[in-house]
Length: 421
Image 1: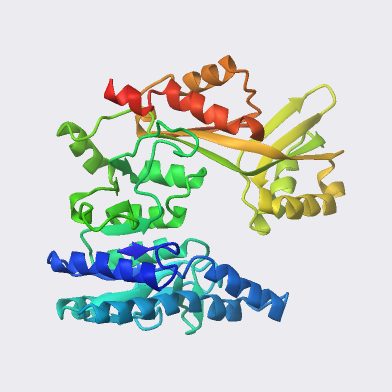
Image 2: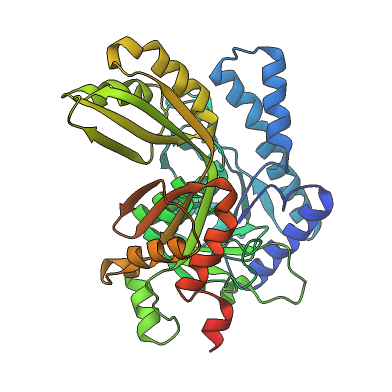
C-alpha cells in the first residue's frame, strides 16, 4: 500500500490512513506501507537547501529532502501502534533499498526483501519511507519527483506481493482529465504499455518510472483513492483502476468484464516549448551538432521536424523540449551557433501536446486519421506529429488544449453517455 503526500498531510489524515491499513490487516493480509512526505514538505526542504547554499552538494541535498518521508513513516507507525496494530518503520538503508549513485535522481538497483517478509510473517506492518534509498558507498539517495511510487513498486516486487495499491487523491485512471471533460470515464483496467504512454505524455496519476518497473517486474498495480468513507468498498474488491499485463487484460475482455476499445485515453501536456532553428546547413552531421549538446545536458527532446530546402542546401529544424529546460536549451544552442551554422532561434512556450493512447491501435487502422480529421473540423491547426505503436501525439496552440481534448474524447466514443448507450 502506498500513500501520497495529500493522504499524509497532517495527523488527522495519517489517522485515516492507519484505519485503511488496519482494515487490510483485519482482512487477513500481510501489509507493507510506503509513504510520501506531507504535501508541500519536500518543497519546503528544497528551499532550505537553496537558502543554505545556492550551489548545493547533491549528496547533502538528498540527506535533507529524504527526511520528509522519514517523519511520515515514523508517525504512521506510531499511529498504527495506537490502534492496536504492531508496526515498525524501515528506512531506506535498513532494508536496504540499493540505488545508483545519481543523487536527486537515483535508480533502484535492488531491495533485500527477506527482513520485510520475516517481519510481516510475524504479524508486523512494515512502514517504509518512499523516495529514499542508499548508494553502494552508503550515502542517502533520493529517486526524484514522484519517486515514492517507484519505491512502492520496488518493495512489492521484492516481497512478491499479490498487488501494489497506490492511494492518491483521485479514485482511478480516467479516459481523460475529468476537470476538462465531465463525461470522462474511470477505467477498470489499463495495460502497462498504455499507462506508460499516458504517464509520459501528461497524465499525472503515476510516475513513469514506477510503471516501467511494474511492467518489468510483473507487479499488478491498483490506483485508488484514500479519500473514501468508512463504508466504502475494500481495496480487495478492486474499486480503482488495475494496471496489468496485456495477457491479463485479454483475459478480462474474454470474460466480458472489460470492453476492448481502440483508444484508451486522451492526455494533454502544457509543459512543452517549441524551438525552431532556421537555415541550418543541409549536410550530414548538422542535426547531430544540434542534439548532442542537449543530450549531454540531460534535456529531453520530444517532437522533431526537419524541412528540407533543397534549392539553398538549408533546412529549418523544429523540436520540443520541456518548458523548464527552454532557457537552458536556448543558451546551449546560442553557444554553438557557429558550429551548427543556423541563422535564428525562434521559441514558443504557448504550445501543448495532445496524445491519443490505446493498445487497440496495433491492430486497427484509421486512429490517426480520426484524430487529424476531428481537429481539422474544429479549425485546430497541427504544428507537429509524433507516433509510437500505441500513441499519436500532436502539437497545437496552448489555448486550444481543452477544446482539442473534448473533441477527441467524443470522436473516439469515450464519453460516459456513449458507454451507457
